[in-house]
Length: 206
Image (cartoon, rainbow, N blue to C red; front, side, top):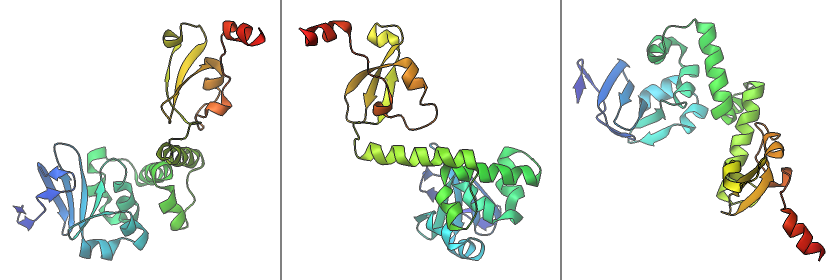
């Protein structure tokens, strides 16, 4: 398909393109009904991206693809000469602000990429990256210690007591205070205070 006299992609990893832009030969921004991102031709990617960036691109035919939520930041941090095009949908911040934006996003979503390139991730965002990666690992294992969902006191009928569901599909009653104390760290059942109804305590003593 041609767009503004240039050959561009029509089919994408995110579905059929509904909008196409090609700010430079080999660099295409696509939108679909369900998402979109940047698609880089193989010659463009090999010319402008490091091997670490190419490794994290999704291959689709002869293209390297990066979705528009956060993967595109990998392309942007290595292609500063194309920042006017890459940042067009975000407005015109100063270049220094753009660098901070990219470092923050990559530190949270792709810190492994930064480390592979010898770039120090942003400290707080990197902490959250490690929490997210560990959470995903435990989810795959259906870890009985990982809390995946909580319901408030309406689900327990007890003030200050919430219901926690773990990755193995089981439910547990824990104190709201102990759960909130976990903050932005891993949500682990073993770090919470279990709630045991008084009636059960009495029965156990009997």
